[in-house]
Length: 151
Image (cartoon, rainbow, N blue to C red; front, side):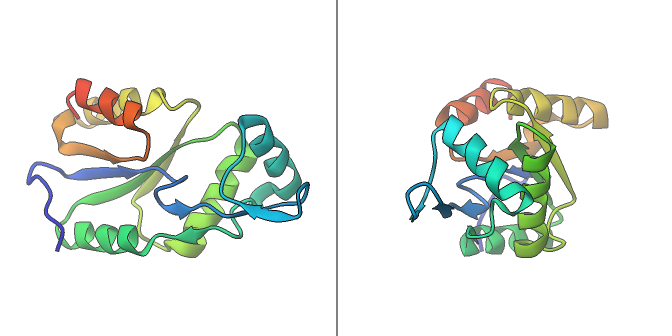
C-alpha cells in the first residue's frame, strides 16, 4: 500500500499524462500520436469533440492509488486545465468511462498556473489547512508552485 502524509485529506489529479495515458489518432498524418502542439490539440478537439480521449487509456497504478486513498478516507478530485466546454465534457466522458465513481468532484481551470491558487481557495473556503491538500501532476513547475503555497 502506498504511504502518504497523514495530514493529506484531499488529493487532486490532473487528467493529461496522469489519469490519461495519451494516445490520439491524428487524421492529418494517419497515425497515432501521444501529443500535439497547442494549435494541433485545438484542431484535434474541434474534429473529435467530446470523444477526444477515446483512444486514451487509464493508468492502473493511479487507479490503484485512488482506491487506496479511498480506503484511508482521503477524498480524490480531478483538477485539470480546459480551454472550453467541449474539452471539459471530453475529460468528463473519459473519467466516467475509465474511473467510474472514483472522484468526489471535478474542477477545471483555464491555465496551469491556476491550479495551486485554486487548491488554496478550496482549502480556505472549507476552513481546512492547505497542507491537507496534494496535487498529482506531471508538470514540475506546477508542483513547485504548490509547494510554494504550502500544499
